[in-house]
Amino acid sequence: MSGKIIQTPVLLKILQQSVLELLGEEESDRLFQQTGLSSLDKQGILFILEALGDAFAQRFDSQTARGLLIRAGRASLIFLRRFEEGIADLGATDNRLKPVVQRFLYSLKELARLFSRPCDMVVNVDLIGQQAFDWHMQVDAPEEMKMDFAPYFFFGLLQEFCEWLDARKNYQLVYTSASGQVTGETILIEIRDPD
Image 1 (cartoon, rainbow, N blue to C red):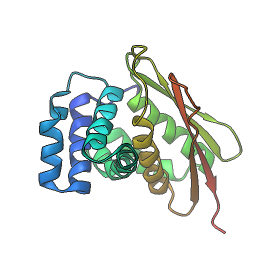
Image 2: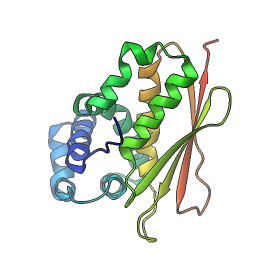
Image 3: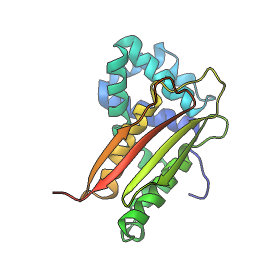
Image 4: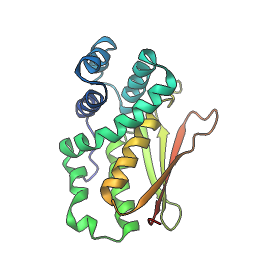
């Protein structure tokens, strides 16, 4: 992918397709048109994901919004692979033949690079155990910007992404939000062999 980041109009298209899959055409159109989500093409990724979460919360409630964002994250992988060639290439044979830890570290870093924008949010991935990874999202936006909903989208995306990279393994993901923490959030990913 060579440092490429996802463009906002592409992200909006992916989110619209994902929400359409979850809620159907009528509800999806209403959500994007009435809340102005479809006109956020000049905004950053974090702002868009938070706006989507707010729209879900207004329509339903905060807890349901988080669940819908997890489902939207999962549903978005197929569209992300369709619109972002670099992500689709991670499913190529040469990547799949790498040892598990190398494949996941490389692939997660490529996915993180796609969503990192210095003016908005930076995502870093580190190996923290023999088969465990730390997906850390750091806010680099104005101080009033926080992550109430965005981590739930990434939680769902990472669930689907890990299963796509290797369906023979089991994955445990844990969202480790620190109480009152504003500037960063972490999702821990552990790869396990099936019992």
